[in-house]
Image 1 (tube, rainbow, N blue to C red):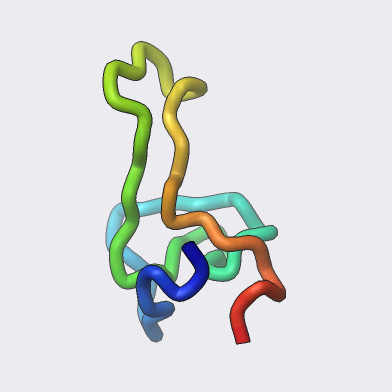
Image 2: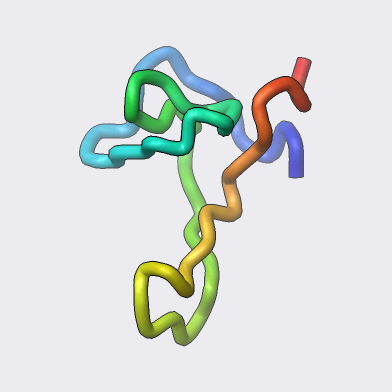
Amino acid sequence: MPGRVDKINSHLQGVKCVVNSCHYWGNDHCFAQEIEVQAPNAKTSEMTDCATFVPNGTLK
């Protein structure tokens, strides 16, 4: 998973993220080149999962 997408210099428009333990996080925005949200057949937001998440400090 680490390094799956590039971290970019500007945040993804319209994507708010408050997961400050993620490598791609910056001031409540996502700086990943793209995101992937998983959980086919999810019925609630709690059943979804950001597959792009990488813990801070795991990428060089």
